[in-house]
Length: 123
Image (cartoon, rainbow, N blue to C red; front, top):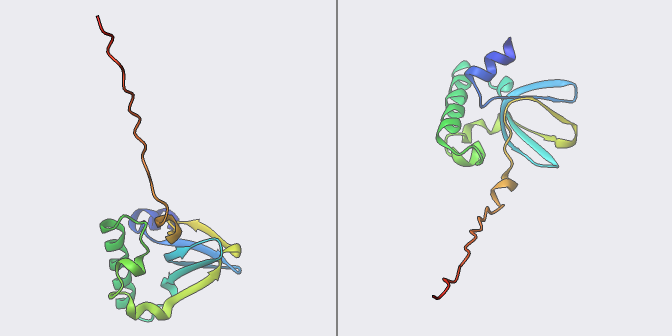
């Protein structure tokens, strides 16, 4: 019930299991070596928690979701550096929610167009 509530109301939040603990927050970046997350549980005040949810919502609905939140909202998230956690991706299990990988931005998507020229038969 709780995970369905998180998924419906806050689609930008992820639930991660690492080292026997579960963390709820916004994934900054996950590659094959490191996973970084803004941990919602370590925020100090309720106003900071509310503000992080608002920033997450802005990122979710106004970006293409491939750009990490800390790049998209750089100035707004400067005060949240203290709640950032970096983990070894080998031991991270994503239980719920989206992840972002900066390496996916570098891949170019080239569409090849096939054009076939036909010679008109001469009469």
